[in-house]
Amino acid sequence: MLRRTHTPRHLAVPTAVALACTLTACGTEGDEAAADVTGDITVFAAASLTDTFTELGEAFEAEHPGTTVTFSFAGSSALAQQIISGAPADVFASASPATMALVTDEELAAGDPVVFVRNRLQIAVPAGNPAGVTGLEDFTNEDLTIALCAEEVPCGVASVQVFEAAGLTPAPDTYEEDVRATLTKVELDEVDAALVYRTDVLVAGDAVEGIDFPEAEEAVNDYPIAVLAEAPNAVGGRAFVDFVRSEAGRAALGSAGFDLP
Image (cartoon, rainbow, N blue to C red; front, side, top):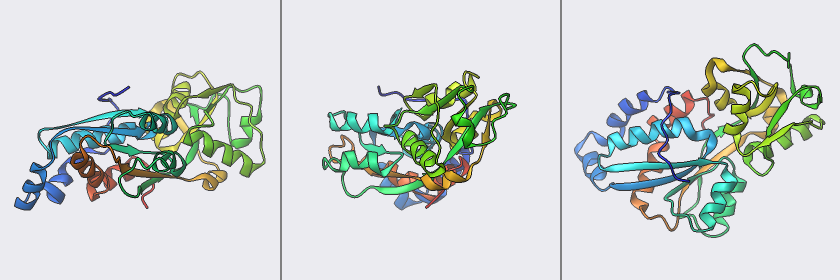
């Protein structure tokens, strides 16, 4: 379901608003380019991009008066299936090349997708780590309550890879539909530990603690972005992708904990 998402968890993206002016829209040439970008722009984006993209959407709208950026955040595989089924969207930002391939294999992307950030998993535990979780091996402990992402979404695929790399068989109590649903289980103290992206741990603030583990390097996720072939507002979609990839966008994404290619 499409929604314009607002969140109280503000990251370091106000800097992007200030930078955007000097980078793209404050000279005469920039004003002319901005004038061509109008109307509604619909972006389908991985759940792990919720906070940063929401702030970037607000910065983009400030730079391009007359535009409205509407987001649909969910698991990348679910979004890909919606696009394949004909859901109208201008941009798709996926949390893995495999889910983007579901769209490109159907020739539904306008041009080649571009990797704009990378992300990796981190163990998330409630504040204070009451269960004393120390590493990935704790996920095999049936006495603990464990949450993982569903295996069909990118964070779930990455989880499978890290457990295989560690030679461990996890004992999860719940599989969640996307990384944000998995994070919520930790925030509400409903589980002892979960695997989420490190960017999600940062978003959660003091409610969650993150624990690094070496196997995370075996499953670093590339995030590709593309304008869609049937985009209702292709000009707006291209402008939004350019904004995400600008110095302002990269600064915001880097501040949120993403790795920059």
